[in-house]
Length: 127
Image (cartoon, rainbow, N blue to C red; front, side, top):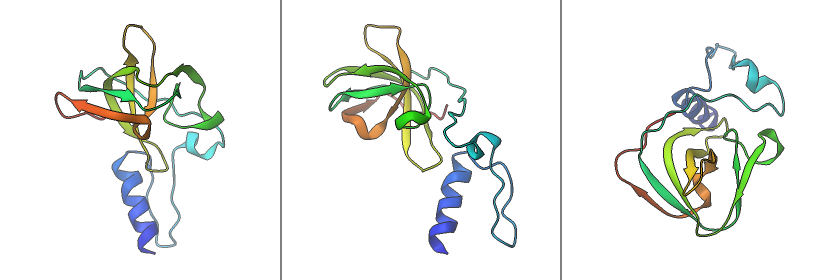
């Protein structure tokens, strides 16, 4: 039970649950979360918060989900720098950053797990 409450608290804090928890434990979630494989739209803003250095080759995505759920924007190689704009948590509680690949106009979401180094000039803001 504690795990369920903690998970709901994380999802609520991330803004992914818009409904209410009832006495039976049912949760009403956004419609896009109910559709398997959908990639929810995320409003983004450029907060100029810092950057990260890639620890390997990973896919930059249109939304904060790995695999086929969200389309791939580009593959970003090891050692490349991504400038952070803002961040979000997906429905699994994983932290993703929205940013731009240095020297390009290519933007998208990257999992924070994919960076070997991060620098924050100021606190990273939610998208």
